[in-house]
Structures are given as structure tokens and as C-alpha cells.
Length: 191
Length: 191
Image 1 (cartoon, chains in turn orange, green):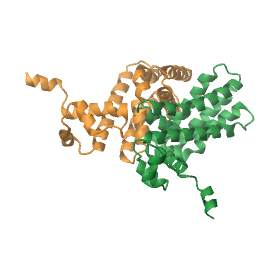
Image 2 (cartoon, chains in turn blue, brown; image 1 turned 90 degrees about the horizontal axis):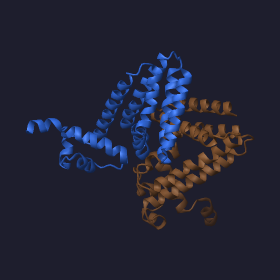
Image 3 (cartoon, chains in turn cyan, yellow; image 1 turned 90 degrees about the vertical axis):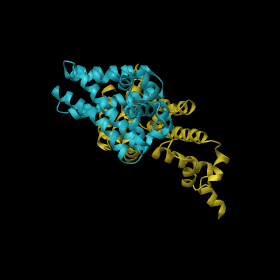
Image 4 (cartoon, one colour; image 1 turned 180 degrees about the horizontal axis):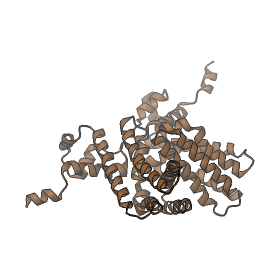
């Protein structure tokens, strides 16, 4: 049933992006070669250039896939009944992913930290990932009736990012759990 | 006066470490070549291997230089009369360095974020930089009579690191300034 097989396996382009996202998170952008990505995606190395002319093009596609995943995750949080519950669930998302965060850092934070040192376009594209989360959190704080919603969103997101970085660096999941709990209490205190 | 000239210019090893520290901060570990470091240090590329057999050896030396600089900076904060003033001055250190932090990220935080993705020894060595700051901040909170000094030190440092990352990513110095001010008020509230 070749047709069904084609349907169940993502096409080569999708496989390349998914493998790149995984490898960039594990090893960083600069440490990952197109050949490694092709191998992980089970795509012949010579085929990569058919889909992505440069590594930067592939990194852009990875950022776009991150953006789609972040939006989908934020949409799933919208099911919670109150902005307070939604903000706490957002904070808890890093705890849910703790093993991965401790091992390789926050996928968004570590990507932005690395791309911030490279020039221009990729850094700007990656910064959009932060903006998506911040805009969503700001909307929740605004629904809580907070005029300083923008600042509160930044404080929350910076708190989570800092906790993820310190916990990953010190290889200590408890730091992430404890800081998330503290931020959740802080959200309750504002509501 | 060749002797005097020798005294005023740091030796080649020191120059290589200082240039490497600067370039690693600007461009990241994986994006910086030994040839670029040698050129920036005005040392013939062929000489580098006399001082450092591998790039990892040079990165270790950079981490050690960071550690010395961090310790010196913390010592300079000890002149402040109270633990509260010392903790606030620590927080303000990132604001004092704001242009550099916005441009390339926190030198310690972005180094740890990158090395955390590489294997073993370098990541462990870089984590010591976080531990030096955390131990110092913990001592200050303990002097304030806080039993939860360790946790408070982590919250403070994670707050600063998160603010630095978000501010650098969004290229917005006000985020760093505002979050530092918020953390300074928080220190006051604990004292």
C-alpha cells in the first residue's frame, strides 16, 4: 500500500525541519551540520539543497515550526477557565518539559541566546518566538484587569527563562520546579 | 626602552585569553576560530598551539579568567555597608553593563547556555561561574538573617539572567533596567 505509506510518513521537507529542530536544540545551531540533519531525517544529504538552499533557510523553517508549536500550545491553554489558571498553566509548561529543559535548556531561550550573537535576520526571526508568548501572557494579565499587563508578562517570562537557564546550567530540576511554584504563587497574589 | 614596553603589554598567553573572552562573548564559542582569536590578540596563528593545545584548553582559560573577574567584582561590592546594599549593587551590575548585555547577552549566562549543549567538562567548568555568584548572594541573604538564603539567591540570579536574556533578545534595554529595579525593591522588602 504505497499510497498509505506516503500518507503516514511526513514528507522529506517536514522530516528535515523536525530533525533540525531536535538537533539544534540538543547541540546548538553552530554545532549542527546539514549532513547530520539529513542523516537524522533519513534524507540523502544531496537532497537537502533541493528543499533548503542554505542552512539559514532551514533554521528559518525551524523557527517557523517552533512558532506554530508555541501557538498550538498556547491555544490548548485557552481551555482553562480563568486568565489566572491559564498563566499558571503557561508557567507549568516548563516544569512539564523539565527533563528536556534540564538537558538542553529551554528550546526557545537557548535558541534566542545563540542566535542573538549571530547577525541580523535569524536573531530577529527567533525574537518573534518570545513576542508570541509575551503577547499571549500580556492578554491574560489584561483580562485580570492589570494595567501593567505588559510589564507583568515580561517579569513572568523572564522569571521562567532565568529559572530554566540556571536549572539547566546547574543540572538541578528542583530549581525549575521551585521557581515555577514561586511564580505561580505570584500570579495568585495578583489575581 | 624595550623592557618597559614588555612590561606594559600583557604577554601573548594573556592576550590570547583576553581576545578569546571578548570574541566568545560576541560571537559564541562555536562561531569563533583560533585563527580569529590569534589575529585579534596580535599573535601569529602558529604560536597559539604553544600556549593552548586545543580550543577547549583556551575556553577553559577563558572561564578561569571570567571566574577571577567575577570574584574581583564581588570583592569590590563588599565595600558596601550592608548585605542589602551589596545585593542591590550586584543586581545593578547588569544595568551598569547594559549596552554590552543587550548587544551580546550576559557574558556568563550566554556562555553557560551555549556550553550546556556541548559535552561534559566545559559545561561543568562554566557552571562554576554561576556557583560563585550564587554562593556570594546566598551569604548576603544569610547575613540578612534569612534561613531561605539559598533559594532567595537563586531567585535573584534567575531573575537577572532571565531579564538579560529577554532584554537582549528583544533588543530593549528598558526591560533590563525595569526588572533590575523590581528585583532591588524585592531585596528591600526582604531586608
